[in-house]
Image (cartoon, rainbow, N blue to C red):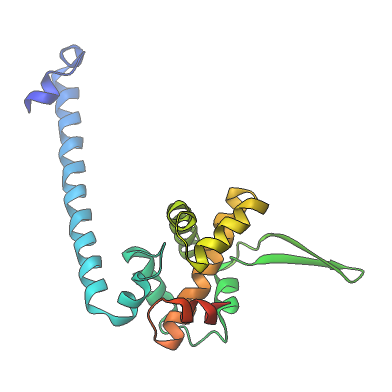
Length: 185
């Protein structure tokens, strides 16, 4: 038993059997951490070796996990005619309710690939403060939207835009830049 575990408050009050079970669980957690680290290295290696994944990683908010998952799910993205189609397939576009000729936008449809949608939203949430602080077209767009809408709405809108940019990068074979960003809208 390691010293830090034995020195914790109240540990001496536990029975030897419970201490043994806890130590078994800790060993299992350490083994799982090691396996996760191996998988992370594998993803990073895949990102270095595969060209589409390397291009996707250049997009802010899309890291190794998002890039490998997108490439695995959509390949070169040519199955979609445009970026909006891929965003809709992911469930990131607003549902529309049209009555009497007046269209109303509702929340996102939440149809499609839940795993990719969740990861893109997490990536958008993580990169939003970075983008808002930058003087880029995407940063200006995010700042303008933040002035008009709630932060969570902006995060989902940014995830939608990231999906469209990812489509442009995959379908056109380019690296993320202002030209690909314009093609994604």
